[in-house]
Image (cartoon, rainbow, N blue to C red; front, side, top):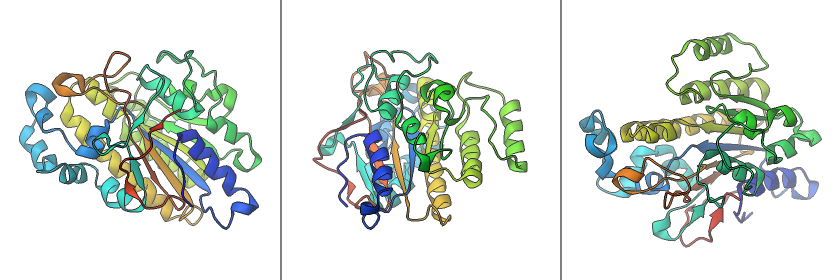
Length: 338
């Protein structure tokens, strides 16, 4: 089936609802959807690879330029992006689709005009920008997200969950109203199944020194999400990784690249984990994207927001049984979060 991509919520809901109808059973194979977000990762790194001008101490805050260049400096953009994001370019690009390489006429962007996190996540999850969502303050989302809507359907009740490093996701998903299981920040709600591995994770969350007050580490979040997946078997899952954005704001381009590389490995691990489970194998679609872009140049790469030119530009990748393997799209119709 040729899927026309326009919005993340339409993708997520459309596949699942159609897959639940008898008429579509023979055509659509997606039974589960995982929406994965890498906060603030630029389309430039995804499609063009590491920016050489930032791989030094002066412009990129790099602690060990020689080591960073050995790991990620390549002669061409194609080689650089493959070194940085090997799963994206060896698997997603071969079996799925990627949008957002503006040098090849593919545009993906946010429409909220604010170009920072909460407005972007609301646009992504509710299907439209909302002027009421105009800050990163943890105010309960007035909009019903596609996750909340799906969770009201009998076949998805208790099978919808969200995991994220940022504590504000309790508000973004409006956990109190929606009843969705949300695991976010440094003080997440305990997973339902208690295991020795989860007990260790709880201890690590409690005892690890916090660099960012409201954002935990990607590694802890990833381990918790995997534990929940294997115990609870959700059909609709959100996983939000936040380190790329935090390191960019800190002016550490070396750690942006290393956290992006690890993000790619996390996505690969989730994909391989689910493909090894019968209820997910060849029945699961991944939608992978960012909540906003960033500026360009030797300084603005650190920033995003209303006044930062080009921070509206994002990227989108889709991998699953109902997505034709068209790879990197060129001259594609523009797509948006909304």
